[in-house]
Length: 79
Image (cartoon, rainbow, N blue to C red; front, side, top):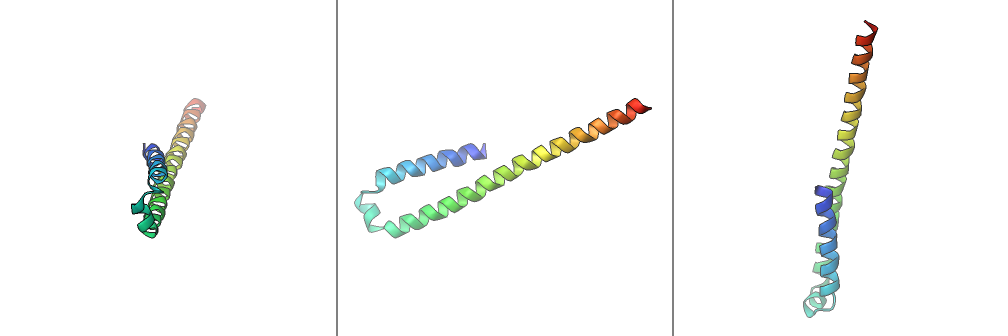
């Protein structure tokens, strides 16, 4: 869900840049827009990294649980 929100945010920011790049407001405050864009990009990158981390963590936990259940089943079969 978070990864999808990051993707939608990136698409909307790209669209906004295309629309606003030649407006007088953008030309007057170009540095502020660039700073806001960079800050947003850094924030979205951190959110995306956190999302990927939790997906990897949940996969590792699933594999560990599967391995534990397999060991228990093999121990039961040996008895």
